[in-house]
Length: 231
Ligand code: BTN
Image 1: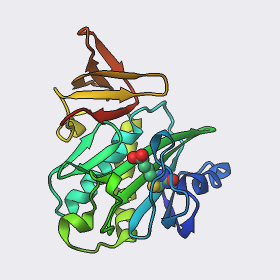
Image 2: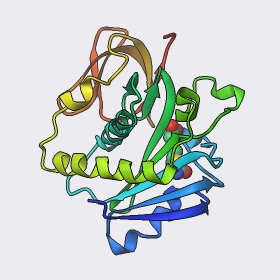
Image 3: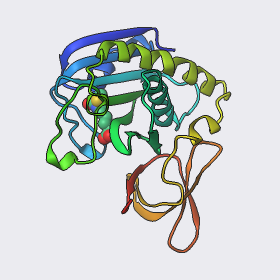
């Protein structure tokens, strides 16, 4: 349960700043208005100019949880629904889409006995570099500037009860199933060990993705990155 949000104006990466609080073994959130070296998955850079929301949740889950990124995606969707956004979906397990474009990316890193869940949400950003042609922001979709610190507080507020329920094994996958996109579609799953093509078959009861590979075998993934292939 996160009881404290520690706010900064500028850091290198909130993922690294969060590590500084690990010795207290207290679950906290670290946010910043700007990051000099924001990082995304697979060693990519996460462009972190002012106007975006940059948040890291330092967590000490009691059980081994592979579903933290999906849980964070669900918390963000609930917050955005509170702001009256619709057409929200989750590209399992790390990306939140708004109108089918990426509005939020999530990275979960293990560090000592902690999991640091990093959330990058495009709030008031108006322009993206050309190579991020599939990105969008809340400002682009609504025409409005929103209060970033207010959203940070709401994300933590929505995350906490979901996290508690999950740890008590009380949270059912059907909570997120409605939002998942891509079932029946062609994708590539990228893990640290392999890249496998197939068709998304389903999401399992334990929040894993089931992929039908080219020989028809169903493979189960607890983590990984999904790349959409021609859809
Ligand atoms: C991705 O889609 O590749 C994940 C992007 C995660 C970005 C967030 S912003 C807050 C936290 N600090 C970082 O350096 N990265 C994450």
